[in-house]
Length: 361
Ligand SMILES: Cc1cc2nc3c(=O)[nH]c(=O)nc-3n(C[C@H](O)[C@H](O)[C@H](O)COP(=O)(O)OP(=O)(O)OC[C@H]3O[C@@H](n4cnc5c(N)ncnc54)[C@H](O)[C@@H]3O)c2cc1C
Figure 1 (tube, rainbow, N blue to C red):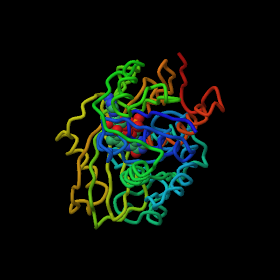
Figure 2: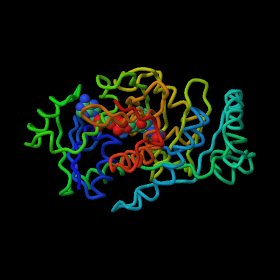
Figure 3: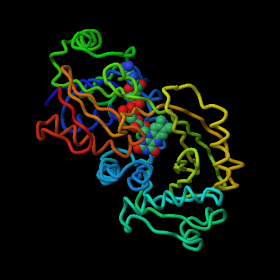
Figure 4: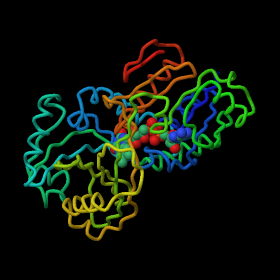
């Protein structure tokens, strides 16, 4: 059994803590966030797990890392004490008539970087078979089988319960830790856990956007989403709408709830959703199905995605521990693969990693 200190309790921090205690290790967590996780990007996220459509919109490597995670998610979710909403009906990609050039660009990229088995072109009849309400507005689509999404808030709640109930986890809320050093770690360990930093076999920094002072090149990419309850709409697939400004998507949740997102703005601004984005998000929603007119807006939220220059994950060794960061818009798409990599690294089973960039100093 080893003792780990995890700093940051967002998506990566809490998933890693859960995997470590499952393996019989002792974990201490320090985070400025509350235990619900409202201060993390992972709490706001749409939590789509879509390796192929994301690869088309970003880069080819995303498909490989994403597919490893997509295979792991059902296994990880099956280990939880409650069933989490997880829908793997696939993704439908569509465009309005005026945005056909966006659709043509997406299709060309798909042809270039994916294999023809990864997707199918649907005509209106085939689209109506899969998603009848969508075929009222659109006459064709690309279909990506097997892509999924999950209920992130439920996942967060369950992990909070597991971690707070476990005798192997000590989770303390703290002030923001702007910069980490051996001296800072010693002070934090004494103050919060009444022990020396030496008791920890490894310190793992999972502060996401909060790690900028310690990770050169880390940037924030603002995203805004809207969450609605729409009893008149019954979509069973994740939907991506080709849009001239942002790649928009609609992620289903249980009980006719939907998340529509997301803006992609190079900024570390975490202030509430702006009026222009709200108007755009709402008009996209209404353009997908007129039934959204009577939907109730449950929430509009914004947060920032922590990203490196190449938009790929980074795992970095420092003189005080290990940093995991840069999951950008792929926290759910990448976490199981990246965390599996990190676990192997922590258990000294590997010297290098597969699913991100490892930097040793
Ligand atoms: C609008 C939006 C939509 C998204 N949709 C998707 C999606 O559909 N699919 C997908 O795969 N990914 C999506 N993502 C991306 C995903 O949410 C992130 O990649 C992921 O949350 C990053 O995980 P993390 O643990 O590194 O950071 P976070 O989840 O942000 O967690 C960091 C934690 O550290 C804490 N912290 C921060 N600073 C400090 C500090 N100084 N001291 C102590 N604690 C600190 C924070 O409060 C937080 O709890 C989306 C993100 C956004 C913003």
